[in-house]
Image (cartoon, rainbow, N blue to C red; front, side, top):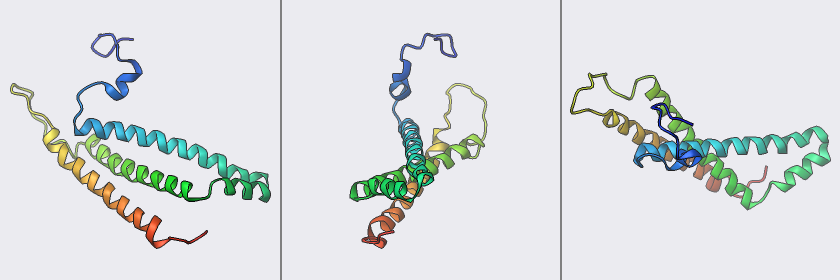
Length: 150
């Protein structure tokens, strides 16, 4: 398979994670992809577990009995953390796609300028928003509802 410039793609699927330079934006890209895959996996498991409701009350109680306990509470918390990061970073990406986070266009003359100086503060704001959501989720999961059974 050839890339857009006509060079062969020797990285294959490994290039999805390992290709290119590793700066802040590359880490955000990789984490956004991984959290997206994790959320899809959780969504499919959620559909599988809740579909037991269609088979009667006994199947529902058995299905819910398999997904309770401290291990699943930690799993739900990790899903929330993935959601918090994915949502905040998704907003950042939407702003960049709309042109709100890249600065004014300029003529590409040497020495070339980069838009990273405009995008980096937006990335930091997205990470701070994700951290704020994570702190609120931690408070909700482990302090406010401690010992509360649904």
